Structures are given as C-alpha cells and as structure tokens.
Length: 206
Image (tube, rainbow, N blue to C red; front, side):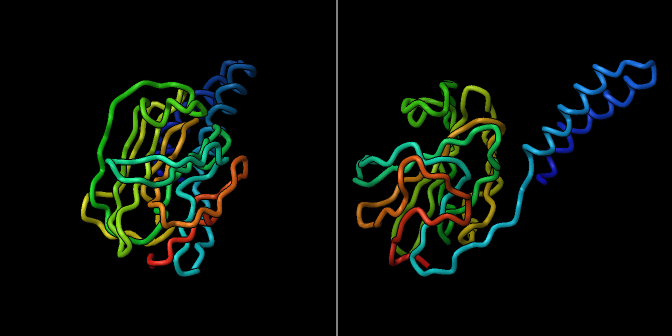
C-alpha cells in the first residue's frame, strides 16, 4: 500500500472505534468501512514487468477509452487514453526506460475523466521522457472526483520500464503519447494493468 494511505485511512477507522465506546454501532460501521476502502484504494501490488525489447507498457490500470492520431507540440503521433475508476489501482508506472526530462503541472477543470475534453482541459501533470528512440509523453489527469495528481519523480531522474512514478487520488485518466512509428497493440475497451500490459512496440526503446 502507498504510505500516504495511512494518513487518509487511519482517522476514520480510529473515529469508528471510538464510536463503539458509547455504543454507536452504525456510525462506527460506516467510518470503519470508509477507512478500509481508503486502504483498498491506496493498494500498490507488485507487477510482472515485461522484458520484451521495444515493449511500451501501460502507465496505469484501467480501460482503454481512446486511441487516436494526435499531434503534440507540433509533432505527429498517437494518443492512448486510459480511464481509471475508483476500483482501479491508482499508482502510475513508467511506460519505458528513460530519463524524466520535464514534469509540467497544468491547473485546469475537473470534467469527468471519461470525457474527451479531460485530456486537454483537466488538471494534470505532463511528464516528458527522453529515451534512445526519442521523446515519449504521458499525462496524469485529474477527474471529477480526483483532485490531486502526484508525481514522485524529479526532472533528470532515470527510471526503468514499469517503475512507479506517481499516483492520482480516486477516479481519473492517464494519457500516453507515442510517435507515429510506434506500433500500437492496445485495443479500445480492453482492461490494462500498469507496468504489465503492453500497449505498443517501439523497437528502438530499451
């Protein structure tokens, strides 16, 4: 579990236990259930990272909701969007090995993360990665419930494929942008696991 989960999960559990002292079972049950759900939300399971050369793994758990051709910073490419419900693991992982070149925080709106407008207009962290093949970009995007995007890595840090890089609290969205030469293997509507599911092949990556 992500350590931050204790900060949010322990208070309602403690409050629930205190409610048992005067004999208030219903408030106690609700508070304890809430605390246990928070622990569940902040879970951080281990994953089997593919060793296949050129594999681009999913940066997040969830369902693929869009695969579109889209330019980024004037360069052609493809965007894959993943929607995370409150039931999904919310820890994000590096899609490939490389160096964190830039982490750009953009304040914005809080549209439902399943909406297309969320990719451009919602609060987000835009993470640029330098790789031997070129630049890859992925975004941590807040949703209607999630209002905090957190990146644990700093600019200049080297990361391995599948390494943990951050998390988003509650329902949210993660986008990944790939150059046109990447061969997309993801399918719209399919469930994916962060650090484990292969989204594309980019043969020059590690």
